[in-house]
Image 1: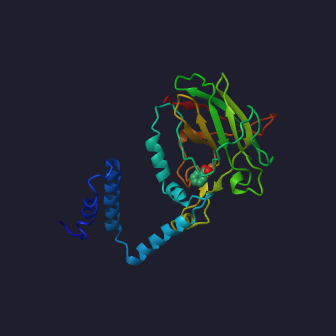
Image 2: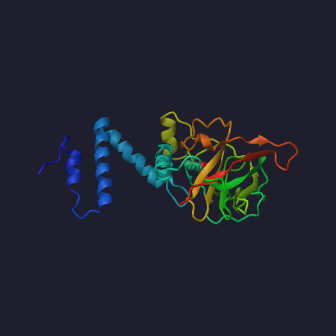
Image 3: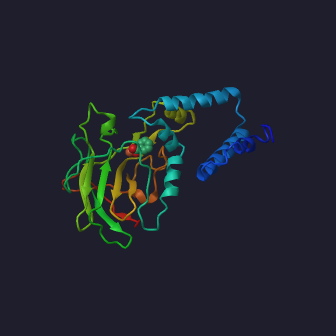
Length: 278
Ligand code: BEZ
Ligand code: FE
């Protein structure tokens, strides 16, 4: 029997786990305790610093509600959400890359006719988003569901401004036909800060980081027999592409927004999605 000491701390805590513990839980808890104790030994926090850390986590929990998930935001700004996403969505060359889901998707957005607008408030610079949903061999996928959402001209999602924006503003669901094509009108997205009025925002400020995300359109693309894609297209040239607060940018997802002369929209953004079979 070894009593707890500075040297034996992780080993002693891990030895307490019951013999019947689920093997996966055992492995996860063992790694958690091992890395956490190594972190504490590395940092050697003062008692006051440890109390401040507990207070930070307490405030993070207290900030959570049905409409605000401060712990996911913490995971996002620490790059952990993107790391978990990368581990779980390793894809072959040519398949569209995933990125962070974010907190602003809403299930049940209206299904719209191909070419229809998702901008219900009529604000912002109009932009046509179009492309195809393809398999790895370049064949069109019929019946793919393309669920899209973006912020408005002022940098807010409809759910952040329920008293200002119409419900389902800048959201819609489109279903591809035999040619695998999707096409909808929206507004050219603008960069916006992630919610920064809580403990995560304070932490960013204290470590000299800004809360901004580069302008992007969100896509959730699903089709029978294929792995769903949760991703964005990022507007090329955005000043925050290299410093996204949540590390979501990937080179393959940066898409030029081209000016359109004499068209029905001021801008056009074209991107094909390539899905990996299940
Ligand atoms: C978003 O793009 O909607 C988002 C992603 C992560 C944190 C906050 C917002
Ligand atoms: Fe977003």
